Image (tube, rainbow, N blue to C red; front, side, top):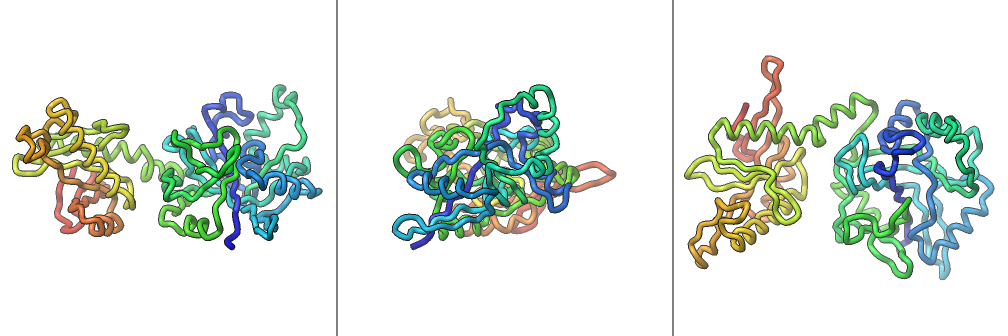
Length: 393
């Protein structure tokens, strides 16, 4: 029988951090990441205390086992439950955020992974001083901090590593194996609202060891290397909404300059497409999905958008946001000119090309690359297959 492995998911909710001891920035995992990296071989207490939530019938067994220890406990910890069922408390943990003061794209997502060195409720004062985030120590030394309610039995996690994933943990219940025990039964960690099904503070999620292995080895589990502020700023430009806004603004100006028909950020059933364009009278209408990297999964996302667009045009005709696609020719043409799909991603586009070839959607893949001339930033767009130049600044 495959063992059941529990991993802790911390909630760091920045909107609740106005009165946080370390200030709002300390509600971002990035501050803790800096602490670890700037103090070589250091550790840090991650956020506040955690509770034993999401464990179901295992809660009493696990909590009793841990509370018997007279000092902090190193993870992972493996024990046999009833009927010789093996369970494990992993040293791997995650951080869910409703938003992030320093990484704005982290709204209601899990980007960060932590390695837990120890958990406990009886850390020494020396350990507390050495490994509490500097900003939090400052807050605790204020009058309000010194008068705070000292509660016993506060379970804390001492973290030795904190890394950030390139893309967040999927909320697709078929791709994310995370389960929690609610009041009665096992249920997915992600609720129907796209937020945790267990609210407040934290939850222990579980899966079998085989499911965790597949999850850990997934192509989506790649991480970013963050060591200092310079790296973060560079990453923000290259891989975040700063860069996304930059790419979009450059494209808008190029298309307008070259006489393309262009609309952008068009709403479609709870989401938005990036661009609807037409280069000239003979060129087909194109829906362009912009990706900052060579992202697997972009093709299926684009396919879903195009299907929604076609349905919307058939239903709303020339009242649709996509009215240029309405051909008004009755049922035989089904009233809609189906647009061509285009994924625009960073050079080289290898992964997306593989995905396009494997799904038979006949989409185009374009790549972009920044260029500098006379110390000024520009961009170059090419067809990923032919390398033919499509547009440039």
